[in-house]
Length: 290
Image (cartoon, rainbow, N blue to C red; front, side, top):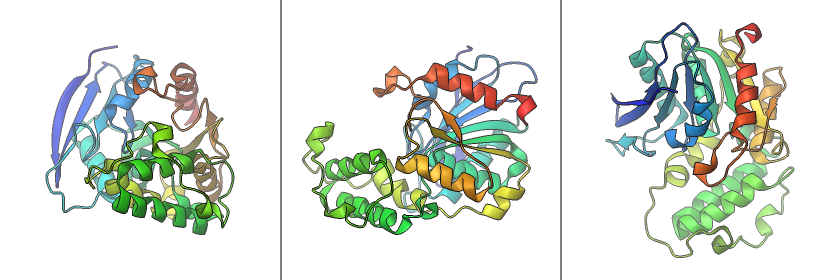
């Protein structure tokens, strides 16, 4: 694979940093997008697509992506506008997009607004909890995690976050009555450092999970939309939200190897099965599927 070329793009309130691995030819370029994950989370997955141009980027406030106006709230609409501006800057024509987690939320909003920019969107486990049958309980747990962060800092909140996303099945009404998980059990700090600008818990947690997709716009978009979930996370929160959105759009989710991080390599410390994941993604993106 060609070495990535790193560039920056000024957008309202932020400076985005993106990496492009160019390849001559007419194969549809592939954009890999996460949130709050930055470009580094897709390094291994990108390496399996050496037959097409691949773009990765750091969203505003993440990794190398700098917020120049911290008064602007990071929302799916704002991230989608960033993606729109990035694709205009690249001027590569319609692209394929694989987007995971909050990145999938942002990419869905992009397709709602600018479907002409995306040929195929593979939206991997977007955490849109308002679509769940147990949304009232899920929203209460989501809000409790945010409140825990505001009052106790990163460690206790992230421990609750990990417990939530790994929980299997619908959330029960007594979920919050359980003892709070110990941050130390997850290798998280137990002391509060006083900061409140975490890219997940402060900047994107409420807006991303609280996203309300425009179902009519998605259903009528020229973009082919594939909802994706992990084979090992079908009963977990993000696997369930992917299935819920697929149902609303009249489809079924395509299952990929692993769980929420099934595409990640060993450099992330939580390796999935990126080779097998890439093989499924390549098959999904075949022109004959479009």
